[in-house]
Image (cartoon, rainbow, N blue to C red; front, side):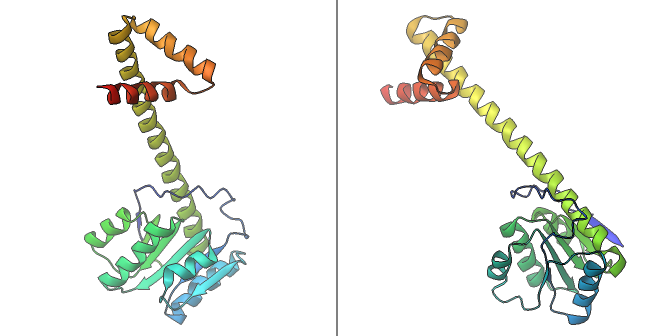
Length: 213
């Protein structure tokens, strides 16, 4: 079984249910009834009861949103590039743990899957006994990327806020002759008095200074 793991950061929340939880809502997307049966049987044998099959990809996103699954399994066998792109669009839009099964692929399609945020890209690995393991893996990778995205977002926000506070301190130092410590103390005191965050006070000061300039 070839296995390619996605490396982008889905923006949906983490799936907190245990990975082996039979109450997971799973949707299988497969227009081939024989191959769909492999996935459905594998899920049933693993104890998953809330499983829906979509065997017609017309209005696919609407159908998925109506089901609102925890996990999405997509089987494409030997897909065209157009059908692959449609499924990658599902991964980008729905933002749920998503595994895509294909019989063969190339580097461009693998890269496209990664860029789309597909959690697991399974090449020549459609086997009933591996389905539950792949569900677990898909959720695990999705959650790992979600946590990393949250950490990156928090770091970017913190950096942006530090820049705003630094700019506000500079304004106070220039206009009121304060030292850096005095400027920060003034921002903190105002924030406490107004029951706001320091960065909110700093942002207001920076905006006012920009308007006055």
